[in-house]
Length: 266
Ligand code: NAP
Image (cartoon, rainbow, N blue to C red):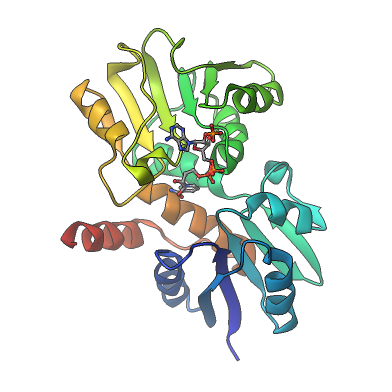
């Protein structure tokens, strides 16, 4: 029987993860199945228990269960201190977070961005934002500001990382080298309003939402910034999960190119 993996979340029907992991498995000659589990909102632990009882080896975790996955884990990687997006079952339950590596690899390897010393604005303070702060700091970014609609969440996240400060959107000033939109606003065709001047000509504007042109990306392009979506991060975080489960890192370039071509045909 093939080893079983899945993405658990609510909703999950739209997910590209089974498609991505099927390509990784084929390229790495790994015998595995990767499915989707839409757990009831109050049924995360029961769904994971049942998957494990059936021999499941690992899960990717998406909205709204990343904090519950952290609680479910018996051991966690340092980079998954707050939120877990990958679970590995090998006797115990190991929780990890691959979002930060995914973002940093997409920026630095796929896009060729040198992150050292960059002035960064991170928009959002939810699961995705919490997962990437540490990786961006480790990659050597200079100043980091976190802005969020609910200011208290930005303050709490910034307080966990020395040197990082919190701000409201309205009180941001000056242009930034990198603006990462880790809010889900683009899914609803919305975007936080940023003060004039945040996007400069050389700014990289990165929206974690993928597969659509969001108001954030449109505003960035209009201001002369380099705009890109989160498709590369999706593929890179999946590759990091695959590495954790299977001990080998799949090549991501061909999978990303094929996925982008497929989405642009729609
Ligand atoms: P989450 O935990 O629900 O957090 C949502 C965040 O978005 C919060 O900071 C929230 O602010 C903010 N927000 C929502 N609607 C907003 C609006 N209309 N205006 C301003 N802020 C708004 O979600 P998450 O897990 O962090 O995920 C965020 C996004 O990242 C999702 O779209 C997800 O699909 C995407 N993501 C992509 C990847 C990838 O690989 N590309 C990986 C992870 C996540 P409040 O705190 O004020 O509510």
